[in-house]
Picture 1 (cartoon, rainbow, N blue to C red):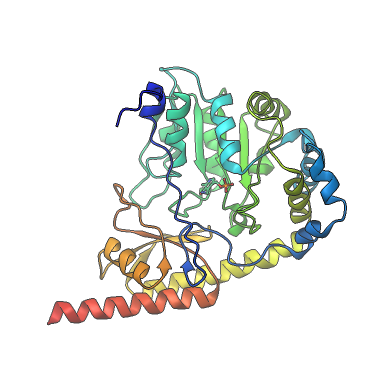
Picture 2: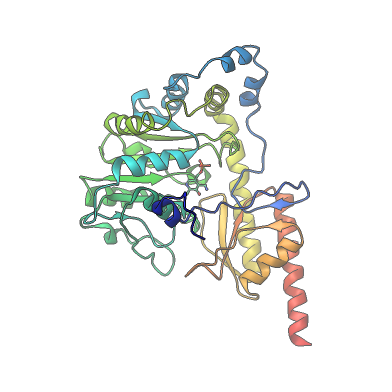
Length: 364
Ligand code: PMP
């Protein structure tokens, strides 16, 4: 419907649709790649700090200096190589605005199957884009990313496939586009992949983007960050300071710094998620699913014995939420987040029952 108050650009927007966040405790929620384990207890201690009320009375540090220093220390980088934002979605938005708006002849490059927020930012900021197709097995064909471009963005591991692109191939991308920013969205890097952050000192065009939402179990805190050479960080700061100069609240700054410092917690929790993922991959294969090899905290899996959307709907009836994308090439798949072992057992049992019921109705 035409709304006379909306600008034409607003009316044309097709906003991103996030996975559902229903408020029910009985749900087995495997649809938005959240971490099933509670965040670091050391990080949560921040909430009991008697200084907190006074900190909240004032505006927060606009530069999030202590948090940037904590991230830099963890990564072996300089604080001038760190930029923080209100969730990595905000960091991504600033990166799109800062580096990828270059006009009609230079499209931004990202895969045909990838994080569905990228085309939304392109529309918001009027950025043309080209989407090279993933190979049949969902791997990225790096050679397709040559030629005139505003830059490249891709998640590694990719979402929603879970596939990891080896660092040698990330280097090839960086060399194919030496004059343009190559942004590697490492939302899922802590679940077994090798980070491209180790290449930052060698590549002035590399921007690595991370989040505390997945591996640190802090999706509700909204904290993301970017790592890159200081000239890229300065670019992001210019955009941020033209948009919202205090994006990270005082609680988030402190809690995130404590979470980043608790590397023992990260190691233990990620190891548990990885072990469950490997086990579930085998169990799903035994239930006649094709499972795409994943280094993330989710798997993309194609049920051979039942239609994917039917299975999604029937799981939903049993209070088990997974993600179904009604899109080309992945419409036969479900994306299943890795929960606790008990949650995954509930999922596997439900799939077994649903498939058995369907087998019976087919033979009747
Ligand atoms: N990048 C990718 C690839 C994601 O899947 C997500 C989560 N939807 C994000 C970025 C954004 O995460 P957040 O804003 O919670 O940091």
